[in-house]
Length: 99
Image (cartoon, rainbow, N blue to C red; front, side, top):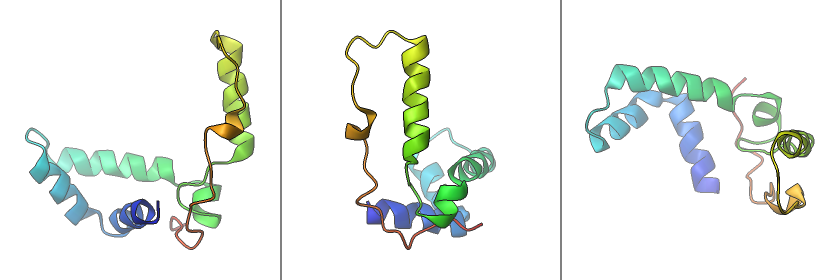
């Protein structure tokens, strides 16, 4: 988990080498298009939790709310406790998104 957090943070801080690696490994991708896509992903990763708690943090209140929403509109045949599907225990709390 820590390696993934560091990799995402590195790509946030300096995206061009990451985008170059992605484009080099995947024929058909174009740098400018992927840079635009990365900007959108970067924006989606930035919230009050990723900037203050840890990059990759799951907000338990949001998780409960999302589960209730899914339960309302979809037929969940076997309901489950959403808290059994994720953990924040392995996150390095020192790695955060820049504000």
